[in-house]
Image (cartoon, rainbow, N blue to C red; front, side, top):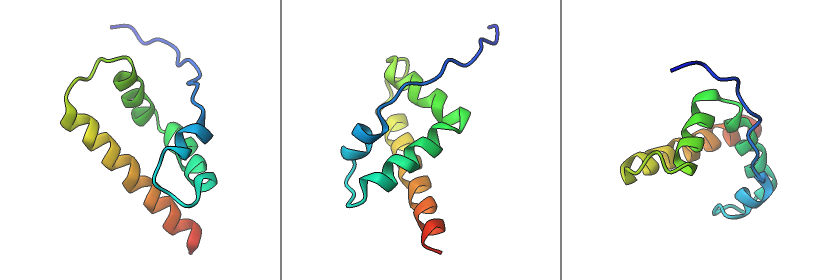
Length: 79
């Protein structure tokens, strides 16, 4: 498998954040932007969106990781 250059990943961060259970969608959007800067997370999201991953447990784990990272980022902001 050859290494392909990373295409810019298009995501409407505000719309995605609005779908999260949060009272602070602007901060959630910032957290999503930060998460998408992590290559492994971005690749996981792309695989899920492309339908390459059909394992519900894997999707649940990815969601859990995303929420955990967002919570950690929120804690850092509050300190």
